[in-house]
Every structure is written in C-alpha cells, then in structure tokens.
Image 1 (cartoon, rainbow, N blue to C red):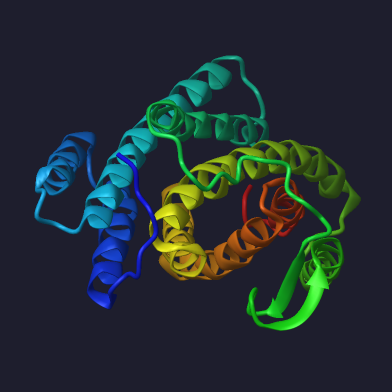
Image 2 (image 1 turned 90 degrees about the horizontal axis):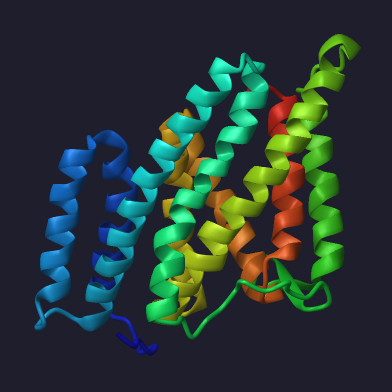
Length: 272
C-alpha cells in the first residue's frame, strides 16, 4: 500500500491523531485480549475502502504498534524473570529490560520489508544541517552540532540542582545510568523516530507527523511508570527529538541528546 502526501483536512488530522494516540493510551490500560478487540476495530477501519486512505494507513500503523507493544511487554517479563533468578541488582535488571523494545521493532521491520517507507530516518544523520530555535522551522538558525551542544549544556545545568552528589550512590548510579541510557536511547530512537515518525511523515508531512508521533511518544511513557502529567512533558520533549531527527535527516544527533537526558533522569532519581 503506497501513500503519498496530500493536503490533509483538519477532520482527517484529528481522526488520525485520535486513532494513533488512542491506541497508544488504550493498549496500556487494557489486557492483551481487549487489545485484540481494538486491533479488530482498527482492521475494520483499514478494510473500509470509502474511508480516506491515509486514515486507513494510520489504522494499519496503529495495529503494528499494538503488536509491538505486547511483544515488548512479554520480552520485558522474560528478561526480568531470568535476571531475577540470577539475582542481579534491581537497577541492572531495569537497564537490561529495555532490550524488550526490540519487540516494537520486529513488526515494523517486517512491515518495512513488505511496504517500504518513502521517508527513511534510519540513517546516521548530519550534524551540519540547520535547525531553528525555538520552533524547529522558525527562529534563530543554527547548525545541528551547535544546537545539540547548547541544548545539552542547558539540560545538564537544569538537572544539576536535583542530582544527589553523594559518592556512595553517584558512581554506582552512573554505571547503571550509562547502561540504561545506551540501550534505551538507541532503541527508543529506532522505534519512535526511525520507524514510526518515518511512516507518519510519509502520510502527513513533517510538521503534522511530528505532532502526532510526539504526543504518542509522551503518552507511551505511562507504561514504564510515569504519571500522565510527566507523559505530557515527554510529549514536548518528543517534539524536540523529532525536530532534530527531521532536520538532521537521521538518528545519531538525536540519540546523543536522548542519551544525555536519560543519564540525567537516572542521576536525578526519575528512573531507579
């Protein structure tokens, strides 16, 4: 099924927003059996030819998301159970359990073999492309590398006030944080920006695609223990990450910022 970008009406955009974000939220609040019912409803939308084809396409992507979510849940369960049997530290188990994000990658990867996305952010990306502050496409023009440097300094300074600098905990947390940040930043960026954002940009273009995926990215964090208000803040953070991905045309720059943020989350106590 090929999709090309056309002018998207407000009603169509809202419908696609509700379908995808509704999927992200609902799958976290229900059982796997109820999720199968949701997949059936999405499939009925996909089969209904009179519906605007981009809405049908988003329904298909949402089905892939549900499948990936439950693969992720079960992979996480088995990883944690196995490592608990080996009596690993809790922080170590949490870090390695993020490998379960591979569950999200599998259905999108298989679908990508069958139906290639025109937009492809699964690339290194350029540090010399330009981005605008504060609105990605509007504001002060800056190369990606300098924008990352400034953004990193700002977030490090901001978090420096809430980090526990006690040597007894800092060094051990730092090691666990490096492991967690490496796994999580790489795999989350592959899933959300490399695979999902590419699909939505194909359908909606850069700006509208960024909005929907960023909201979904924020809401997805409820499943890993964050309250909804923090998830809303993650949606804003997702706008920044997605904007960097779009402007750099790849993942390495955004992985670096995500990596730094994850380490700071760990050191400030938001993760462990």
